[in-house]
Image 1 (cartoon, protein in one colour):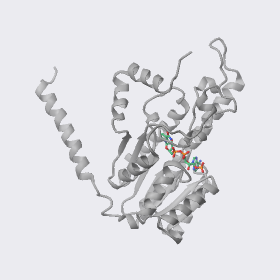
Image 2: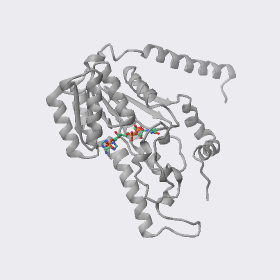
Image 3: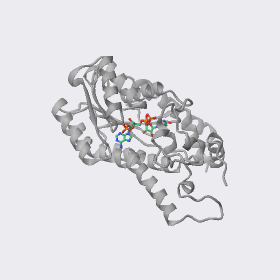
Image 4: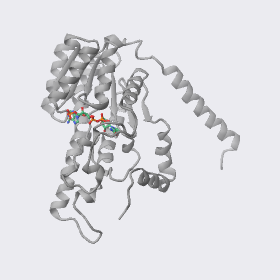
Length: 322
Ligand SMILES: NC(=O)c1ccc[n+]([C@@H]2O[C@H](COP(=O)([O-])OP(=O)(O)OC[C@H]3O[C@@H](n4cnc5c(N)ncnc54)[C@H](OP(=O)(O)O)[C@@H]3O)[C@@H](O)[C@H]2O)c1
C-alpha cells in the first residue's frame, strides 16, 4: 500500500523544517564552551593549502595551534606566518612529522601533553593525490595487452602510497589522539578534510577516491563509537592549489597532461573559502558539509541515476574510455 500524497508531502516538509531548525539552533554552540582564544588546535597537514589557511585563521582569533607536516622549511614558514598574525611563544608549535608514522605521532602527542596539557580540536587536512587511471598506472597501453607483473606491481606501489597518506595516516592519528582529546577537552572535536571524490566516483581518481573513501568511513564509524566527540566531515570538490604535486602515481613521462604538469590549479574552490567553512563546521558541530553544498545532490543522484553522474564525471575530467 502506498502512502497518500498528502502524507508524503507532510513527511517531506517535516524533514525540511527539522533540517532548517537544526541549522539555526546549531550556531555558536561550541564556542560558548571553548572560547576561540582558549582553543588548542592540532592541524595535521599544515605546511600548505587548506591546512595552512586553517592554521592562520585559528591563530588570528587567538587559538593555540600545533602544525604538523613533513616539509620542515614549509612548516617553519607557516609557523612564522602564524606568529606574525597574532600569537607568540608556546601558542604556535611546529612539529615536522609524518602522520602515517607511529613514532612521529606518539612524539607529537607527548609534546602536546607537555606543552598544553592536551588538545580541543584536531584538523585532519593531510592527504595525497593520485591522478591516473589504474590500468595506465599498471602500464596497460592498448586494449589488446594484459598487465605485466611489473605493471601490476606499479599499481600496487601507488595504491600503497595513497593508502598510507589517505587512510593509514588518519587511522594512526585517530588512535594516537582520541583518548587524550577526550580526557583533556571540555568539547572535543575532530574535523576530517575528505573529498567529494570519496563519495562520487570519478575517472582517473580510482586510487585517490577509494583511499579517501576508506578514511571517511573509518571516521564515520569512529563518530558512532565516540559520541562525546563532535566529528565533522568536509567534502570539497576541486580546490585551487598545489595538491596535484603530491600525486603518488605519476612517473616522469605520464600520458595525461594533467599528470605530466601537476602545476598550481587555478580552477576550483578557493582555499580561503574551504578553510573558513571548515572552522565554521567545527564551531557549529556540523557533521557533514559538501562544498559546494549542492553537491550533496550529486551524491544522492548517483544512487538513483548512476549513468547521469558517470557522464557528468567523464565530462568534468575530459575522460574518453578506450
Ligand atoms: N585540492 C583539492 O582539489 C582537494 C579537493 C578535495 C579534497 N582535498 C583534500 O584536502 C586536503 C588538503 O589538500 P590541499 O588541497 O590543501 O593540498 P596540499 O597543499 O598538498 O596540502 C596537503 C597537506 O598534507 C600534508 N601531508 C601529506 N601527507 C602527509 C603526511 N604523510 N604526514 C604529514 N603531512 C602530510 C602536506 O604536507 P607535507 O607534504 O609537508 O607533509 C600538506 O601540508 C587533502 O586531504 C585532500 O585530499 C583536496
